[in-house]
Image 1 (cartoon, rainbow, N blue to C red):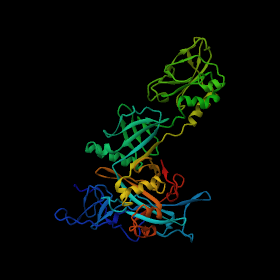
Image 2 (cartoon, one colour):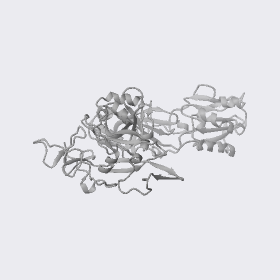
Image 3 (tube, rainbow, N blue to C red):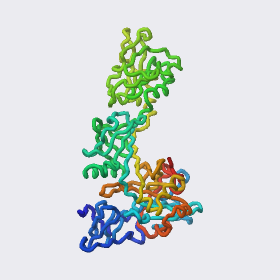
Image 4 (cartoon, helix red, strand yellow):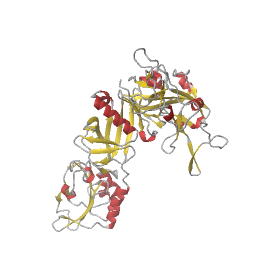
Length: 523
């Protein structure tokens, strides 16, 4: 294996954010095999690659290094510190004497050990790197902490936009390589599925490498450039507005055209004679819509293009695109075929708007029943502005989806099926970096977690390629004994704090429940 020399991690430049008295964690001393390695190298057995690492350097993943002949996890393990609200301020819990803790002295019941920086258990049969005990409200608890090596994993990405990103099932590319596909639209959001074992291992080495690179960046809340076959160019980043074809999105639509009609019908009543809300999927027409009928609005006689579904609701008025309401329409009158002279009359007031209010024009019918542009009345403009007010800001949401297989379960118990059953029985809470994880129904342990709730830089990789991500299993100690857990390696959290390198992050109480008090999110 080619030695990786990008980073030179000596003992002087190991992370010293919160040093402790023990120095670097000694995880396992590698035993060189005769004739295979120079004397100054150690073989890393944290993943199947088995890098041979020279003293003072790291392996291919930058996560493990050779520190004075000892295979060492370079990054410190991450602890979450519980905080509380007090008189409008968020403050950390302090020891009983009220003084700020010195060095690594914290109350262990106010700390949660995450899998970020914990290390892994390859070749699978070994117990998890950390199995810690703590007390919560007088109850003895066990948390099994590890970093999983995930080949079977992906990201489900929700992009809030009406812009046309591309046809469903279209390939999504990163730097030219296929890394995922477009999936279904979900009420104002375009959905992508990115990564997965097929792209990591089923294609070329370049496809696997770039897929892994894209996934790690996305999980670590960094910006990623993508292109969709037959569609848009994207820049997406968790928690940020998406950039579509170079333009940053601003609004997520308030609803489809029909919903927009229903929401604002009463506010338009008396100020307009007709409203058309243009939408790629369901275009709404006020006077035909049930909302207009309930207000006793007379029909306008408008004749719409598209396929009429139910009264006031039209499908396929135009093709998808980046114009009005997610269509390819740039001139809104192009979807109107005309007006029935038996119903329409000169001077009728017509509003055409999009589902976000970004596009809106006002017209009046002339003597020939032709719509002519007119100044929009202030009362009508107020309602259009209210559409925009009710549109939430466009965001990119990134959810990590992974199957926790044998290596993770064997690190918890020698009989892995008992862990799976205990999770489904709500006896075990699963978290990822302390963030609540939703456990899918059905077989196996398939978890899904919002990366914005996880600590920064939670994700790593191994060059097989696969993604490395934290995962924790928390349960009562009695339940851990019953499922055949590894009791011999159990350590008190106090002992971990006193002997391991770590760094502490404040728990984001407003976005996530405290992991030790959280009920499992089961399907």
